[in-house]
Each structure stands twice: as structure tokens, then as C-alpha cells.
Length: 163
Image (cartoon, rainbow, N blue to C red):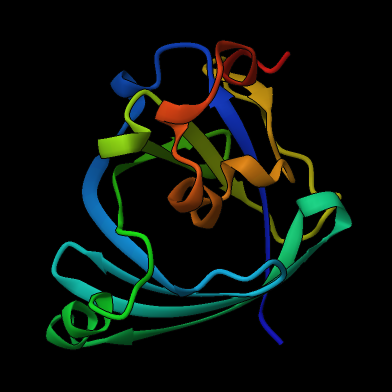
């Protein structure tokens, strides 16, 4: 079983100067029930179908299965998605032997920027770059599937600041 292990952070410094690439991502959800999601994604004209299971380890890990599909098929499947799409630009930022994926959201989630680092084990140590802010791993409201249902633009200032 494929296990995704990642930690998620808000940004608190300059990460743009360290980014080595950027790609536009559009994704929607065929299913976004609590504990399982079926996602359709188009990234740089490549399509993907992803199934994720429930989170474990306080949101640190979860089952993930992903398959690349033709972009035309992904566009067709987008028609089955509920509640619109997530639109974001993903930047790749290498630091300290790890790769940080920084997502800058557009549309109803404009203003939200998060970084994720994938790990090979739940206890794996990594060098923390200076641009990382508050950790939000396991906070459900930061899941992309939840941002579809309750976009960042609808959050109160207290929610945005973590109060």
C-alpha cells in the first residue's frame, strides 16, 4: 500500500528566490467525503487520477494511489467534480536535501500559500528552511478538498492568523 507522509506549513519568508520551477495545477474532487477523496488533476497538460484514504498520525500520513491519465480524459472527468476547482501554482524549492512544494492558490483561495515536504518516515528529520512559518499538518481546513468546500476567502481574520 502506498503511504504518503508529509508535513505542511504556512510561509513566513522569501521562498520565491529559491524556487527552481513552477507549474500550474487545476484540480477537482469527484468525492471528498471525510476519510477518502477521489481527485482529478491537470498539471502542465498531464492528467492524474488520485485516491486518498483517511489521515493517520495526526494528519502526517495517509494512503495515496495515483495514476497518470491522458489530459483529455482528465478534462472530461473534471465535469464530474463537485463544487468547482482548485487553481494554484506549485513551485519546487529544494532545501537541505529535501524538496518543498510551495502552493500559491488563486481564485477563491487567493492569498493562501503553503509549503509541503514529503518524508520517507513519520519521524524523519529535515532541515527547516527560514521561509517556513507555522505548521498546519493535520489541520483539516488546509486540505485542498476542504478548501473547495470552504475557501480561504471566507475565513475570518482569526482563522487566517491561527488564533
